[in-house]
Amino acid sequence: MDCSKNNIASAKTMLHFDAQLEKEYLDDGEIIQDYIIDVNQAILKHKDEFVNLIANDLLIKNIKLLTFNKLTCQQPAWRGQRFFRAAGNTQTGR
Image (cartoon, rainbow, N blue to C red; front, side, top):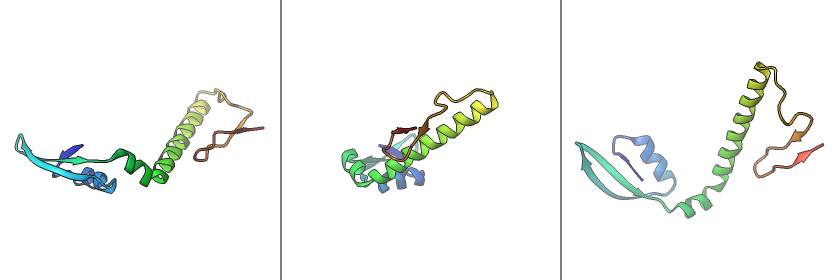
């Protein structure tokens, strides 16, 4: 992955996932930094962060769907069922 040397947020994100700076080079007058990330290692090390991000994303999508259905006077497709959306749990209950 690469980013401009001035893009501190992107560089910090890559470094958070243990990226190694491979090289810097000049491109159209801008210093570009190339990083290498071991994706498998990053996933194993940060799996709890990924699970929380995915769970939060699903929650936000469900809230948006419910809001849309309420505004359009439509019932959710899963009405009458309880869904447990905790990380890794997709069971339905009655």
